[in-house]
Amino acid sequence: MEIFVATGDMIERVLDILTLLADYPQGLPISEVARRLELPKSAVHRLLSILVRRGLAVQDEYSQRYRMTVKLAAIGFRFLAASGITEICQPSLDRLAQRTGELVRLALVEDDALIWIAKAQGALSGLRYDPDMGQPVVLHATSTGKAWLATLDDAQAVALVKARGFVVPSRFGRPVVRDEASLLAELALTRERGYGTSIEEGEPGTCAVGCAIVDPQSRRAIGTVSVAGPVARLPPERIAAIAPDVQATAAEIADLWPSRKVMEAMMGITPLKVANG
Image (cartoon, rainbow, N blue to C red; front, side):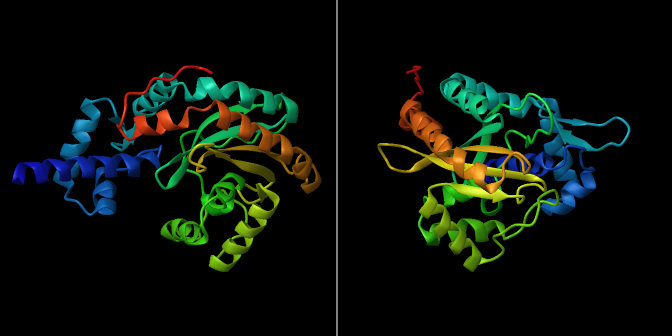
């Protein structure tokens, strides 16, 4: 029993380290990792040594900082490729990007978060807005986050945002949602018009429109699709004009996406077997 608990605790600490390092691509010294996770430096050193040995982390020769490698991201993309998610959805994203001339992104609902997993770039030149793939979505300050939250009941939506806090990364603009009251007002507006918007919230100078992808069987949102671009190309009137196209693409992906099989495989219920179509 003691061995099981110790092993389980070690696994949790390894995951904590990976989660921490994911936010610091420049790396962190071992003392900082230990401080942030409130662990002894000796224990952190042993765990980091395991990650380095498995190729999931590396120690810089000069700064002695530890940082993640791309191996973990590669494993994730291997899963996406094997599951057929991106293969099935990419043509729909490409068509929407071609029609709008802007960046189109697909996010997947994973537990209590949205994760960017695929994109299509419609702009051939000029300013491009392109957030990092694999990053969790800031729910209350993005069009796609608002679109998903609006599919939940108010209590669920408020709880998800409160768990993370009404804060945004430093690179973000000024969010419309700053407290529970403004969140509920924004979600009511999102439900009324059928899509979420972000006007220079996700990043200064950019705007976006996002719609939820709803599983026809369970009637639950399984992801979102959005269009984002510079404010000069996406003023409010153009957002309203392209919103029906975004909604149509979300419905198209919902019909194509084998959501039940994907979700069951993610939860380890059944082996994943996906056929295109």
